Image (tube, one colour):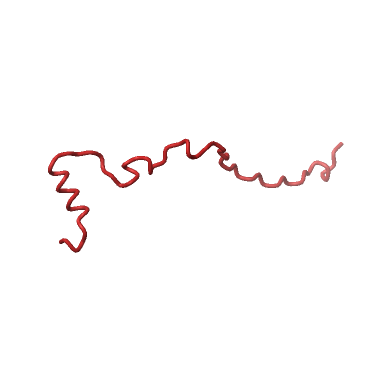
Length: 65
């Protein structure tokens, strides 16, 4: 027969949150955003004159207003 003292269990300590798994592969084997033109700020290729004008106006230094 169990008494009240024996039926009470001590509280379990809180479980730590699950952390992301560590990845031990070679980071240089993957492509980074710097490996692409878009990573360097290039825009998708448009070759019409409207795109040229838009790029000129966007990239014009402020002292050339």
